[in-house]
Length: 187
Image: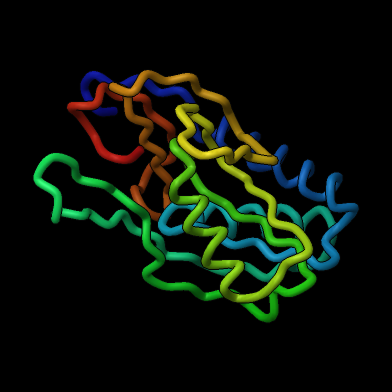
């Protein structure tokens, strides 16, 4: 654990949250018919894959899983203000999205700007019947009217705190940390 950090979810809590979200997805959508999971890079992709595995265990049917690569773009043209706008760098969306139910998956929901870019990327690809949002952590501080449909954990934070989601596939350990802004990385 990083100095000045405290763990707010351990491996078991992450596992339970994903299992609950998988059940909620199935209940709300009355099964898996027409569902496509799309993870937002990096950790959202692994969370989407884990959700797909759980849903397949429950329903015996596999779901397609896609990926969106969204990065923050710095506009250095202004000396007074640097805007950090998300841009889509790449997408791998399985099949046709028109008429399907898309579930965007991300690790942390903060301002909503990344999700807005993801919505635009999906809509550029077709016209889904619905788009839903699943996040492991909702930390508040929205700048856009975006609300998650599925939340692993609500974590009220100050603007000076950061949330660090660490997953085995990327970080070699499984936990969610809250840190002071001067330390760590993430959201």
